[in-house]
Length: 293
Image (cartoon, rainbow, N blue to C red; front, side, top):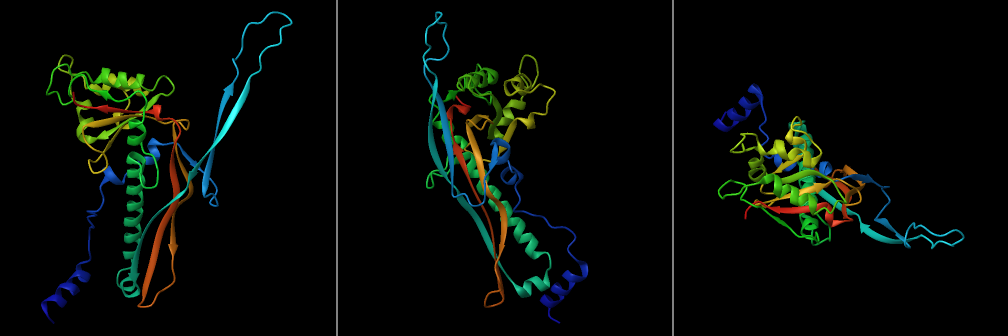
């Protein structure tokens, strides 16, 4: 028996005791898209999600003299179509490999599901210009109020650092129409909210929690969404509402596996897919904050 044969035999005698999944990155694969967006489901037959926008017409209620005929209030409606997009990944596995390693298919399915989640997360944040899908960063860039520039660099390298007032200013950019629920950013930027204030030694996040409807007793991870620099450009954070009037994630078919019959050569092709999209309704629900002066 040659050395390589001995190594293969030894692998089965000693059985793999642990699998280190190097392809897993929790800051990329965590399903934060569904944390940040309200999720609405529609029928699997839907190709276009039609959103009807309604607004009032008329002057509203007024004080009028006895016998006076009031002006009428009415409503105007318009329809906005949003196309559903197919998110997909796939793999092919040989029948011999299935016989040799029973769990291989499950491992490959998991990798594809993680890849679909990565795509969903990336589009939720950055959108997709080719297909006209908005993301948090693109909606914040289109906020008519503009962007907040930090009063003092968040890393403390400049004077007048005031993270609370930076976030308070961003809240004002929502024009009172929306309430902030999350602060989204790279871990390198959001980490400065955990720094101690020089005068009180209190972490900055304890004073900022109330801006997101939380208290200093709440875990900051419930409103600070930290992502990897592969997902979001460092140097900017985003104040995010979670309100269907601002934006939604719409799903017609959630993640599913499409098995395909055995193909020539003994290969099983397997596809994983979903039909979904992200819809922007009001850009004022998202504010971009530059963490440097």
